[in-house]
Image (cartoon, rainbow, N blue to C red; front, top):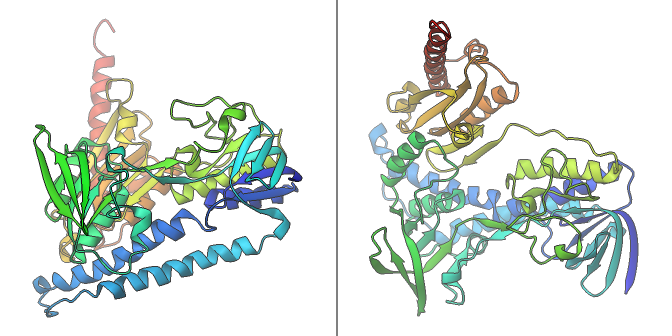
Length: 479
Protein backbone atom coordinates (compact mmCIF):
# COMPACT_ATOMS: atom_id res chain seq x y z
CA UNK A 1 0.00 0.00 0.00
CA UNK A 2 1.23 3.48 -0.88
CA UNK A 3 1.82 5.88 2.00
CA UNK A 4 1.36 9.63 1.84
CA UNK A 5 2.17 12.22 4.50
CA UNK A 6 0.47 15.64 4.19
CA UNK A 7 -0.40 18.70 6.22
CA UNK A 8 -4.06 18.72 5.17
CA UNK A 9 -6.28 16.06 3.61
CA UNK A 10 -9.60 17.24 2.15
CA UNK A 11 -12.24 14.55 1.59
CA UNK A 12 -14.48 15.62 -1.29
CA UNK A 13 -14.18 17.89 -4.33
CA UNK A 14 -17.51 19.69 -4.27
CA UNK A 15 -17.86 23.40 -3.62
CA UNK A 16 -16.75 23.13 0.03
CA UNK A 17 -13.91 20.73 -0.69
CA UNK A 18 -12.41 22.68 -3.57
CA UNK A 19 -12.67 25.95 -1.66
CA UNK A 20 -11.03 24.34 1.39
CA UNK A 21 -8.23 22.98 -0.80
CA UNK A 22 -7.45 26.41 -2.25
CA UNK A 23 -7.64 28.10 1.16
CA UNK A 24 -5.30 25.58 2.81
CA UNK A 25 -2.84 25.83 -0.11
CA UNK A 26 -2.85 29.60 0.28
CA UNK A 27 -1.70 29.08 3.87
CA UNK A 28 1.34 27.20 2.53
CA UNK A 29 0.14 23.73 3.51
CA UNK A 30 0.85 20.51 1.62
CA UNK A 31 -2.69 19.46 0.67
CA UNK A 32 -4.29 16.44 -0.98
CA UNK A 33 -7.93 16.11 -2.06
CA UNK A 34 -9.64 12.73 -2.12
CA UNK A 35 -12.67 11.96 -4.29
CA UNK A 36 -14.59 8.69 -4.65
CA UNK A 37 -17.30 9.81 -7.07
CA UNK A 38 -17.65 12.19 -9.98
CA UNK A 39 -15.63 15.35 -9.97
CA UNK A 40 -17.99 18.32 -10.04
CA UNK A 41 -20.29 19.92 -7.53
CA UNK A 42 -23.81 18.81 -6.62
CA UNK A 43 -25.01 22.24 -7.80
CA UNK A 44 -23.51 21.95 -11.28
CA UNK A 45 -24.20 18.26 -11.91
CA UNK A 46 -27.58 17.44 -10.33
CA UNK A 47 -28.65 20.52 -8.37
CA UNK A 48 -29.20 24.22 -8.80
CA UNK A 49 -27.96 24.66 -12.39
CA UNK A 50 -29.76 21.82 -14.23
CA UNK A 51 -32.93 22.47 -12.23
CA UNK A 52 -32.88 26.12 -13.35
CA UNK A 53 -32.49 24.98 -16.95
CA UNK A 54 -35.65 22.89 -16.58
CA UNK A 55 -37.41 25.80 -14.86
CA UNK A 56 -36.40 28.18 -17.67
CA UNK A 57 -38.03 25.89 -20.25
CA UNK A 58 -41.14 25.66 -18.08
CA UNK A 59 -41.34 29.45 -17.73
CA UNK A 60 -41.19 29.84 -21.52
CA UNK A 61 -44.07 27.39 -21.98
CA UNK A 62 -46.08 29.01 -19.18
CA UNK A 63 -45.60 32.51 -20.63
CA UNK A 64 -46.86 31.37 -24.04
CA UNK A 65 -49.94 29.70 -22.56
CA UNK A 66 -50.83 32.73 -20.44
CA UNK A 67 -50.21 35.57 -22.89
CA UNK A 68 -53.86 36.05 -23.87
CA UNK A 69 -54.75 38.46 -20.99
CA UNK A 70 -52.14 40.83 -22.43
CA UNK A 71 -53.82 40.65 -25.84
CA UNK A 72 -51.04 38.41 -27.17
CA UNK A 73 -52.09 35.12 -28.78
CA UNK A 74 -49.28 32.65 -29.40
CA UNK A 75 -51.28 29.72 -30.77
CA UNK A 76 -50.96 26.11 -29.69
CA UNK A 77 -47.95 25.40 -27.50
CA UNK A 78 -46.01 22.24 -28.36
CA UNK A 79 -43.52 20.79 -25.87
CA UNK A 80 -40.66 18.84 -27.44
CA UNK A 81 -39.59 16.71 -24.48
CA UNK A 82 -36.38 15.30 -26.02
CA UNK A 83 -35.30 18.83 -27.05
CA UNK A 84 -36.03 20.19 -23.55
CA UNK A 85 -33.96 17.48 -21.88
CA UNK A 86 -31.20 17.69 -24.50
CA UNK A 87 -30.66 21.37 -23.66
CA UNK A 88 -30.79 20.62 -19.93
CA UNK A 89 -28.09 17.94 -20.28
CA UNK A 90 -25.96 19.94 -22.73
CA UNK A 91 -25.86 23.08 -20.62
CA UNK A 92 -25.45 21.00 -17.45
CA UNK A 93 -22.40 19.33 -18.98
CA UNK A 94 -21.04 22.76 -19.86
CA UNK A 95 -21.34 23.92 -16.24
CA UNK A 96 -19.76 20.69 -15.01
CA UNK A 97 -16.97 21.21 -17.53
CA UNK A 98 -16.00 24.48 -15.88
CA UNK A 99 -15.70 22.65 -12.55
CA UNK A 100 -13.64 19.86 -14.10
CA UNK A 101 -11.26 22.43 -15.57
CA UNK A 102 -10.65 23.69 -12.05
CA UNK A 103 -9.96 20.18 -10.75
CA UNK A 104 -7.68 19.29 -13.65
CA UNK A 105 -5.71 22.49 -13.08
CA UNK A 106 -4.64 21.13 -9.70
CA UNK A 107 -1.25 19.37 -9.58
CA UNK A 108 -1.71 15.64 -10.14
CA UNK A 109 0.09 14.84 -6.90
CA UNK A 110 -2.58 16.78 -5.01
CA UNK A 111 -5.37 14.44 -6.19
CA UNK A 112 -6.33 10.98 -5.00
CA UNK A 113 -9.15 8.86 -6.41
CA UNK A 114 -11.02 6.49 -4.13
CA UNK A 115 -13.20 6.20 -1.04
CA UNK A 116 -11.56 7.59 2.11
CA UNK A 117 -12.18 6.10 5.54
CA UNK A 118 -10.77 7.08 8.92
CA UNK A 119 -8.66 4.38 10.54
CA UNK A 120 -7.48 6.77 13.25
CA UNK A 121 -7.73 10.46 14.17
CA UNK A 122 -4.91 11.34 11.74
CA UNK A 123 -5.09 8.39 9.33
CA UNK A 124 -7.19 7.78 6.22
CA UNK A 125 -7.17 4.73 3.98
CA UNK A 126 -8.19 5.36 0.37
CA UNK A 127 -9.71 2.19 -1.12
CA UNK A 128 -7.00 -0.40 -0.73
CA UNK A 129 -4.20 1.51 -2.41
CA UNK A 130 -3.11 4.47 -0.25
CA UNK A 131 -2.73 5.30 3.42
CA UNK A 132 -2.78 9.04 4.13
CA UNK A 133 -1.24 10.42 7.30
CA UNK A 134 -2.67 13.92 7.73
CA UNK A 135 -1.88 16.50 10.39
CA UNK A 136 -5.31 18.05 9.73
CA UNK A 137 -8.39 16.81 7.88
CA UNK A 138 -11.36 18.57 6.26
CA UNK A 139 -14.53 16.52 5.81
CA UNK A 140 -16.39 17.87 2.75
CA UNK A 141 -18.19 14.74 1.60
CA UNK A 142 -21.42 16.44 0.51
CA UNK A 143 -24.87 14.89 0.65
CA UNK A 144 -27.13 12.41 -1.13
CA UNK A 145 -30.89 12.26 -1.73
CA UNK A 146 -32.86 10.77 1.16
CA UNK A 147 -34.26 7.40 0.17
CA UNK A 148 -37.54 6.26 1.72
CA UNK A 149 -37.55 2.70 3.12
CA UNK A 150 -41.11 2.22 1.83
CA UNK A 151 -39.86 2.71 -1.74
CA UNK A 152 -36.68 0.64 -1.66
CA UNK A 153 -36.21 -2.23 -4.15
CA UNK A 154 -39.45 -1.41 -6.01
CA UNK A 155 -38.07 -0.98 -9.50
CA UNK A 156 -36.78 1.50 -12.10
CA UNK A 157 -39.80 3.78 -11.64
CA UNK A 158 -38.51 4.98 -8.27
CA UNK A 159 -36.08 7.84 -8.82
CA UNK A 160 -34.39 10.73 -7.00
CA UNK A 161 -33.69 14.27 -8.12
CA UNK A 162 -30.20 13.12 -9.17
CA UNK A 163 -31.80 10.89 -11.84
CA UNK A 164 -34.06 13.55 -13.39
CA UNK A 165 -31.28 15.33 -15.24
CA UNK A 166 -30.24 12.17 -17.07
CA UNK A 167 -33.71 11.66 -18.64
CA UNK A 168 -33.78 11.66 -22.46
CA UNK A 169 -37.42 12.74 -22.57
CA UNK A 170 -40.09 14.19 -20.34
CA UNK A 171 -42.20 11.54 -18.60
CA UNK A 172 -45.96 11.19 -18.89
CA UNK A 173 -46.59 11.39 -15.15
CA UNK A 174 -44.64 11.85 -11.90
CA UNK A 175 -45.55 11.57 -8.23
CA UNK A 176 -43.26 13.73 -6.12
CA UNK A 177 -42.72 12.84 -2.48
CA UNK A 178 -41.89 16.02 -0.57
CA UNK A 179 -42.73 19.72 -0.71
CA UNK A 180 -39.29 21.05 0.04
CA UNK A 181 -37.38 23.23 -2.39
CA UNK A 182 -36.39 20.36 -4.70
CA UNK A 183 -39.85 18.83 -4.88
CA UNK A 184 -41.63 22.13 -5.50
CA UNK A 185 -39.19 23.40 -8.12
CA UNK A 186 -39.22 20.17 -10.11
CA UNK A 187 -42.94 19.65 -9.60
CA UNK A 188 -43.97 23.04 -10.93
CA UNK A 189 -41.47 22.89 -13.81
CA UNK A 190 -42.62 19.44 -14.95
CA UNK A 191 -46.28 20.45 -14.60
CA UNK A 192 -45.75 23.49 -16.80
CA UNK A 193 -44.02 21.28 -19.37
CA UNK A 194 -47.13 19.14 -19.69
CA UNK A 195 -46.31 16.31 -17.28
CA UNK A 196 -49.09 15.07 -14.99
CA UNK A 197 -47.70 15.84 -11.53
CA UNK A 198 -48.97 15.17 -8.03
CA UNK A 199 -47.09 16.14 -4.88
CA UNK A 200 -47.39 14.37 -1.54
CA UNK A 201 -46.23 15.83 1.78
CA UNK A 202 -46.11 13.97 5.08
CA UNK A 203 -46.92 17.18 6.98
CA UNK A 204 -47.89 20.71 6.01
CA UNK A 205 -44.51 22.31 5.39
CA UNK A 206 -43.60 24.19 2.21
CA UNK A 207 -39.95 24.79 1.32
CA UNK A 208 -38.19 26.58 4.20
CA UNK A 209 -41.15 28.71 5.35
CA UNK A 210 -41.68 28.95 9.12
CA UNK A 211 -44.00 32.00 9.31
CA UNK A 212 -47.59 30.69 9.58
CA UNK A 213 -49.05 33.60 7.56
CA UNK A 214 -46.57 33.10 4.72
CA UNK A 215 -47.14 29.35 4.89
CA UNK A 216 -50.91 29.81 4.49
CA UNK A 217 -50.40 32.18 1.57
CA UNK A 218 -47.97 29.78 -0.11
CA UNK A 219 -50.42 26.91 0.27
CA UNK A 220 -53.19 28.93 -1.37
CA UNK A 221 -51.04 30.21 -4.23
CA UNK A 222 -49.34 26.92 -5.09
CA UNK A 223 -52.55 24.89 -4.84
CA UNK A 224 -54.11 27.13 -7.50
CA UNK A 225 -51.73 25.50 -9.98
CA UNK A 226 -50.43 22.28 -8.46
CA UNK A 227 -52.08 19.19 -7.02
CA UNK A 228 -50.53 19.02 -3.55
CA UNK A 229 -51.72 16.45 -1.03
CA UNK A 230 -50.60 17.45 2.47
CA UNK A 231 -50.76 15.15 5.52
CA UNK A 232 -50.10 12.14 3.29
CA UNK A 233 -48.02 9.08 4.12
CA UNK A 234 -46.40 6.77 1.58
CA UNK A 235 -47.42 3.21 2.44
CA UNK A 236 -45.71 1.31 -0.37
CA UNK A 237 -45.36 0.86 -4.11
CA UNK A 238 -45.25 -1.87 -6.76
CA UNK A 239 -43.64 -1.71 -10.19
CA UNK A 240 -46.25 -2.77 -12.75
CA UNK A 241 -44.72 -2.76 -16.21
CA UNK A 242 -43.64 0.76 -17.05
CA UNK A 243 -45.67 2.31 -14.22
CA UNK A 244 -45.49 2.42 -10.43
CA UNK A 245 -48.60 1.76 -8.38
CA UNK A 246 -48.13 4.09 -5.40
CA UNK A 247 -50.11 3.52 -2.20
CA UNK A 248 -50.66 6.59 -0.02
CA UNK A 249 -52.78 7.14 3.10
CA UNK A 250 -54.38 10.49 3.87
CA UNK A 251 -54.76 12.34 7.19
CA UNK A 252 -57.71 10.08 8.14
CA UNK A 253 -55.78 6.91 7.35
CA UNK A 254 -57.68 6.15 4.16
CA UNK A 255 -55.45 4.45 1.58
CA UNK A 256 -55.50 5.16 -2.15
CA UNK A 257 -53.48 3.76 -5.05
CA UNK A 258 -52.46 5.83 -8.09
CA UNK A 259 -50.20 4.97 -11.00
CA UNK A 260 -47.36 7.10 -12.30
CA UNK A 261 -44.51 6.56 -14.73
CA UNK A 262 -42.11 7.72 -12.02
CA UNK A 263 -42.20 8.28 -8.29
CA UNK A 264 -39.64 10.94 -7.41
CA UNK A 265 -38.25 10.94 -3.88
CA UNK A 266 -37.64 14.59 -2.95
CA UNK A 267 -37.95 14.43 0.82
CA UNK A 268 -34.55 16.02 1.42
CA UNK A 269 -30.86 15.15 1.37
CA UNK A 270 -28.66 13.53 4.00
CA UNK A 271 -24.97 14.23 4.74
CA UNK A 272 -22.48 11.67 3.43
CA UNK A 273 -20.87 11.00 6.81
CA UNK A 274 -22.07 7.47 7.56
CA UNK A 275 -19.52 5.43 5.63
CA UNK A 276 -16.23 7.20 6.26
CA UNK A 277 -15.19 5.50 9.50
CA UNK A 278 -16.01 8.37 11.84
CA UNK A 279 -16.07 5.88 14.72
CA UNK A 280 -12.25 5.83 14.40
CA UNK A 281 -11.87 9.63 14.27
CA UNK A 282 -12.25 10.25 18.00
CA UNK A 283 -14.92 12.89 17.30
CA UNK A 284 -18.03 13.42 19.38
CA UNK A 285 -21.11 13.09 17.17
CA UNK A 286 -24.77 14.08 17.33
CA UNK A 287 -27.63 11.58 17.22
CA UNK A 288 -27.71 11.79 13.43
CA UNK A 289 -24.02 10.91 13.21
CA UNK A 290 -22.69 14.34 12.25
CA UNK A 291 -19.60 15.45 14.19
CA UNK A 292 -20.27 18.30 16.62
CA UNK A 293 -18.64 21.45 15.28
CA UNK A 294 -18.37 25.21 15.76
CA UNK A 295 -20.34 27.08 13.07
CA UNK A 296 -17.92 30.00 13.25
CA UNK A 297 -14.73 27.98 12.69
CA UNK A 298 -15.97 24.63 11.25
CA UNK A 299 -13.74 22.93 13.85
CA UNK A 300 -14.98 19.63 15.25
CA UNK A 301 -14.70 20.04 19.02
CA UNK A 302 -11.13 21.08 19.81
CA UNK A 303 -9.66 18.66 17.28
CA UNK A 304 -7.59 19.02 14.13
CA UNK A 305 -10.60 17.98 12.04
CA UNK A 306 -12.97 20.40 10.29
CA UNK A 307 -16.27 19.78 8.50
CA UNK A 308 -17.73 21.92 5.70
CA UNK A 309 -20.58 22.14 3.22
CA UNK A 310 -23.53 19.77 3.00
CA UNK A 311 -21.64 17.26 5.15
CA UNK A 312 -22.31 19.32 8.29
CA UNK A 313 -25.97 19.98 7.32
CA UNK A 314 -25.96 23.49 8.80
CA UNK A 315 -26.98 25.41 5.68
CA UNK A 316 -26.81 22.98 2.73
CA UNK A 317 -26.61 25.66 0.02
CA UNK A 318 -23.83 26.41 -2.43
CA UNK A 319 -22.93 29.89 -1.16
CA UNK A 320 -22.75 28.62 2.39
CA UNK A 321 -20.69 25.61 1.30
CA UNK A 322 -18.18 28.00 -0.24
CA UNK A 323 -18.01 30.02 2.99
CA UNK A 324 -17.68 26.82 5.04
CA UNK A 325 -14.87 25.62 2.81
CA UNK A 326 -12.95 28.90 3.05
CA UNK A 327 -13.19 28.92 6.84
CA UNK A 328 -12.31 25.22 7.19
CA UNK A 329 -9.42 25.46 4.72
CA UNK A 330 -7.98 28.58 6.33
CA UNK A 331 -8.11 27.03 9.79
CA UNK A 332 -6.77 23.66 8.68
CA UNK A 333 -3.93 25.40 6.88
CA UNK A 334 -2.83 27.49 9.87
CA UNK A 335 -3.85 25.09 12.69
CA UNK A 336 -3.60 25.39 15.71
CA UNK A 337 -4.33 29.09 15.06
CA UNK A 338 -8.09 28.63 14.63
CA UNK A 339 -10.13 31.78 13.97
CA UNK A 340 -13.80 32.55 13.31
CA UNK A 341 -14.48 33.22 9.65
CA UNK A 342 -16.99 35.37 7.79
CA UNK A 343 -20.55 34.10 8.18
CA UNK A 344 -23.04 35.97 6.07
CA UNK A 345 -26.71 36.62 6.73
CA UNK A 346 -28.69 33.47 5.88
CA UNK A 347 -30.62 33.55 2.60
CA UNK A 348 -32.50 30.75 0.86
CA UNK A 349 -34.63 30.82 -2.29
CA UNK A 350 -36.97 28.33 -3.95
CA UNK A 351 -37.30 29.19 -7.65
CA UNK A 352 -40.98 28.43 -7.84
CA UNK A 353 -43.32 31.04 -9.26
CA UNK A 354 -43.84 33.10 -7.18
CA UNK A 355 -40.43 32.67 -5.58
CA UNK A 356 -40.26 31.51 -1.98
CA UNK A 357 -37.49 33.16 0.02
CA UNK A 358 -36.29 33.47 3.59
CA UNK A 359 -33.45 35.56 4.97
CA UNK A 360 -31.91 36.57 8.26
CA UNK A 361 -33.57 35.17 11.36
CA UNK A 362 -36.55 32.94 10.68
CA UNK A 363 -39.95 33.49 12.29
CA UNK A 364 -39.56 30.19 14.15
CA UNK A 365 -36.15 31.07 15.58
CA UNK A 366 -37.40 34.48 16.70
CA UNK A 367 -40.28 32.82 18.56
CA UNK A 368 -38.03 30.43 20.47
CA UNK A 369 -38.21 30.78 24.21
CA UNK A 370 -41.88 31.64 24.44
CA UNK A 371 -43.52 35.01 23.98
CA UNK A 372 -42.80 36.87 20.76
CA UNK A 373 -40.42 39.79 21.34
CA UNK A 374 -40.28 41.27 17.85
CA UNK A 375 -42.49 43.34 15.58
CA UNK A 376 -43.89 42.15 12.24
CA UNK A 377 -44.79 44.14 9.14
CA UNK A 378 -46.40 42.74 6.03
CA UNK A 379 -47.56 43.45 2.51
CA UNK A 380 -49.78 41.53 0.10
CA UNK A 381 -48.80 41.61 -3.56
CA UNK A 382 -52.42 41.22 -4.71
CA UNK A 383 -52.71 44.94 -5.49
CA UNK A 384 -49.06 45.93 -5.73
CA UNK A 385 -48.66 48.07 -8.84
CA UNK A 386 -45.81 46.48 -10.80
CA UNK A 387 -46.96 42.98 -9.82
CA UNK A 388 -50.42 43.66 -11.30
CA UNK A 389 -48.84 45.08 -14.46
CA UNK A 390 -47.06 41.75 -14.97
CA UNK A 391 -50.07 39.66 -13.85
CA UNK A 392 -47.87 38.22 -11.11
CA UNK A 393 -49.80 39.78 -8.24
CA UNK A 394 -49.77 36.90 -5.79
CA UNK A 395 -48.08 36.31 -2.47
CA UNK A 396 -47.10 38.03 0.74
CA UNK A 397 -43.97 39.42 2.41
CA UNK A 398 -43.48 39.50 6.18
CA UNK A 399 -40.60 41.45 7.73
CA UNK A 400 -39.30 41.38 11.34
CA UNK A 401 -37.53 43.88 13.58
CA UNK A 402 -36.37 44.14 17.17
CA UNK A 403 -38.14 46.39 19.67
CA UNK A 404 -35.96 49.10 21.14
CA UNK A 405 -33.08 48.98 18.66
CA UNK A 406 -35.52 48.87 15.69
CA UNK A 407 -32.94 46.67 13.95
CA UNK A 408 -34.13 44.68 10.95
CA UNK A 409 -33.94 40.95 11.75
CA UNK A 410 -35.19 39.01 8.75
CA UNK A 411 -38.06 38.17 6.41
CA UNK A 412 -40.06 35.36 4.84
CA UNK A 413 -42.03 35.60 1.62
CA UNK A 414 -43.72 34.07 -1.35
CA UNK A 415 -43.47 36.90 -3.84
CA UNK A 416 -42.98 37.80 -7.50
CA UNK A 417 -39.24 38.27 -8.18
CA UNK A 418 -38.65 37.25 -4.58
CA UNK A 419 -35.08 36.21 -5.37
CA UNK A 420 -34.23 39.89 -5.88
CA UNK A 421 -36.22 41.18 -2.91
CA UNK A 422 -34.44 38.65 -0.71
CA UNK A 423 -31.01 39.87 -1.78
CA UNK A 424 -31.85 43.49 -1.04
CA UNK A 425 -33.21 42.59 2.40
CA UNK A 426 -30.37 40.19 3.25
CA UNK A 427 -27.83 42.94 2.62
CA UNK A 428 -29.73 45.22 5.00
CA UNK A 429 -29.82 42.40 7.53
CA UNK A 430 -26.08 41.76 7.31
CA UNK A 431 -25.37 45.49 7.65
CA UNK A 432 -27.51 45.49 10.80
CA UNK A 433 -29.61 48.36 9.47
CA UNK A 434 -32.59 49.73 11.35
CA UNK A 435 -36.02 49.91 9.77
CA UNK A 436 -35.70 53.72 9.70
CA UNK A 437 -32.40 53.52 7.79
CA UNK A 438 -33.94 51.12 5.29
CA UNK A 439 -36.84 53.49 4.68
CA UNK A 440 -34.32 56.25 3.90
CA UNK A 441 -33.01 54.21 0.94
CA UNK A 442 -34.20 55.02 -2.63
CA UNK A 443 -37.19 53.20 -4.10
CA UNK A 444 -37.84 53.61 -7.82
CA UNK A 445 -41.33 53.64 -9.35
CA UNK A 446 -42.87 51.42 -10.56
CA UNK A 447 -40.99 48.41 -9.19
CA UNK A 448 -41.86 45.40 -7.06
CA UNK A 449 -39.47 46.72 -4.40
CA UNK A 450 -42.11 49.31 -3.56
CA UNK A 451 -43.86 46.42 -1.87
CA UNK A 452 -40.83 46.13 0.41
CA UNK A 453 -41.26 49.79 1.36
CA UNK A 454 -44.93 49.17 2.17
CA UNK A 455 -43.99 46.24 4.41
CA UNK A 456 -41.28 48.29 6.13
CA UNK A 457 -43.71 51.16 6.76
CA UNK A 458 -46.10 48.67 8.33
CA UNK A 459 -43.21 47.31 10.40
CA UNK A 460 -42.26 50.82 11.57
CA UNK A 461 -45.85 51.44 12.67
CA UNK A 462 -45.92 48.14 14.58
CA UNK A 463 -42.62 49.00 16.26
CA UNK A 464 -43.97 52.40 17.33
CA UNK A 465 -47.17 50.87 18.68
CA UNK A 466 -45.31 48.19 20.58
CA UNK A 467 -42.80 50.62 22.02
CA UNK A 468 -45.56 53.00 23.19
CA UNK A 469 -47.24 50.09 24.96
CA UNK A 470 -43.93 49.20 26.59
CA UNK A 471 -43.43 52.84 27.68
CA UNK A 472 -46.96 52.95 29.12
CA UNK A 473 -46.35 49.77 31.09
CA UNK A 474 -43.05 51.13 32.42
CA UNK A 475 -44.78 54.31 33.66
CA UNK A 476 -47.56 52.59 35.56
CA UNK A 477 -47.70 53.46 39.29
CA UNK A 478 -45.83 51.06 41.46
CA UNK A 479 -43.51 49.89 38.72
